[in-house]
Image (cartoon, rainbow, N blue to C red):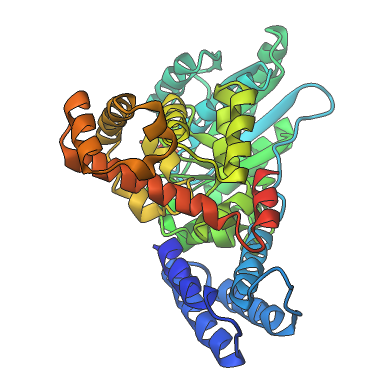
Length: 440
Ligand code: GDP
Ligand code: MG
């Protein structure tokens, strides 16, 4: 994938003490190819590469970074900028009642995302209601009702009506009557942008004056998703993009070029079929994820959500000091399991690229975790704190104690070592700033 390719380019640069213009040109040729292969819009790629090249050649080399690191930093910063800088949050109407209108082509995930958004809003203290304005298929209304039930949110329907404006206006009244403060309006989609649909959506927009129009696009469709976004924005005007199916085999190009091409930010990404699989989009984190720096920020944020803050701070401190014992490793894995699936979280850890993530079988990961736990519990305190003392006879004893073959013990120690090494790479030369940035 893109991430792997870029990391390979940078592996070549990292070690070099000095970089010539030819080195940079060669690296940028590779970056260009990788981005094109990831289905990033051609114009966007050209501008991006030119800008990185210019900055790499122009900038004075900072004392704390090697030239290679400097180029990586420039690429990281430019990727972040490309995806929208600091990120754009969902906004609420100052009037106290917020209407969101969800639009998008058929099958992109509108109805599912209505449920995810309701779930997200409830977690943020809002009282949402859903409204079924896909008037063409009765099944669409049924689907939204199922979704509403799953996220414990009321759904407004008018099965006999063929007028989305009328339905949505009645829904606003009903929502206010019920004491809800957000209405999420699900609309019909088509396989392609067509005039009839656009006219219907423009009329609906005029009638209900939504606070935000959120366009749902499918990341798997690559540049088509970006073209659809451009079309909807030109005709209807949108406020933000929700990019679904980022958990799938997407080549990533859509997330990279949507903002640049449409001028509208990606506000959320969908990362699964479940209703909690919606994440606010953070360009800076996505950039470091693509470049293989992992996404410790997201990891730690999740840890803070689901665990107590103190534990996360302890982990952060240990990471900073590079005191990372097997117990920390186990605890981290335990948190990950608690947070809902190793597969999803592995991609956020340094060194785990999307390919590695795709190959992760979640059930297998769960089994691995239980085995890992058993192995570490069979170690003495000393062994957990200083795994370098684990010689053959100790490993044999632990294997017998945990009921696992010695190969599993070896595997675990290797995994631990790799993780620790990655941690260390963040605390080396110029790493303090990088660490700080990652934890902020
Ligand atoms: P709509 O036609 O735009 O309303 O799309 P639906 O909400 O009916 O979704 C179409 C399909 O996409 C369903 O099977 C969803 O479960 C699936 N889907 C939606 N969002 C995601 C996502 O973020 N990841 C994955 N893997 N599937 C998704
Ligand atoms: Mg739908």
